[in-house]
Image (cartoon, rainbow, N blue to C red):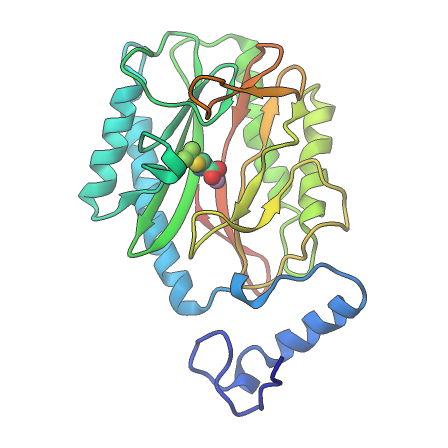
Length: 290
Ligand code: MF3
Ligand code: CO
C-alpha cells in the first residue's frame, strides 16, 4: 500500500492532514497487527462526517422503537407493528432497511416467544397476554444505517419469561463494560456468554451482530460465544451492533422451512434479544442506537 506522507490528506476522508488525523492510529494498529491481532481494514473506520449521518439515522431508529413502545399491547397484530414502523420511518424521510432486504417481505422483524429472530409480521398473528416479543427495527436515512431492537412483555408475563427478558437486557450492559478501544470483540462475547450461563441460559451461536453504518451488514461478524482476547480488535471509528440471542433452554435453533427466515428454538422454549448499536471512540464508546 502507498505510504501516505505526513502532509497528505488522510485516507479517512476527513480532509485533514494525515499527521493530524490517522497517522498515530495507523502506527498503533500496525504494532498490534505485527503482534498477531486481527485489526479492522480501513473501510470499517468511520470519519466524523459519516458518524454524524449514522447518528441522524439512529435518531429515527430510536423514534420508531419509542413509538412501538407506546402503542404495543395485547390484541394487536404484528402486521400493525409493521405498519407503524413503515409509517413512522417514512414520515421522517427514512426507509425501513428490512423491506425487500434479500427478499424480506416486511419493514420490521417481530419475534414472539420461541421465535429467536427474523419473525415476519402478519395479519394472522395477534399479540396475546403473556407473550414476550422482540421488535427489531433497522433504518436507512440518507444512505446511512442504524439498527436496534427491544423486548416487550405483553400484559402479565410469567416470572420465568420476565427474568429471561431482564437477563437478556442486563447481558448488553455486561457486554458494554468490555467495549473499549484496543480491546477485542471476544472480551465482550465471553462476558455475555458467561453471564447468560451463570443465569442458567444459553446463547445462540450461529447468528450474531455485525458492523453497520455505510451498509446494513458490514464486517465484522460479532459472536456472543467468543473468547476473551480473540476476534477483531475494537478501534476508534468502528460501528457495530451488540445483539445476543439468549435462550431459556437449549442453544439449538432451526429455520422456518416455509418462509425461509424465521428462526426458532429447537426445544420450543422462549428466547429474548435486545440490540444496540455502538461506535468505538478514543476513550470508550458512544451508544448510537438502542
Ligand atoms: N436487524 C436484523 C439484523 O441485522 C435484521 C435482519 S435482516 C431482515 O440483525 F431482513 F430480516 F430484516
Ligand atoms: Co442487527
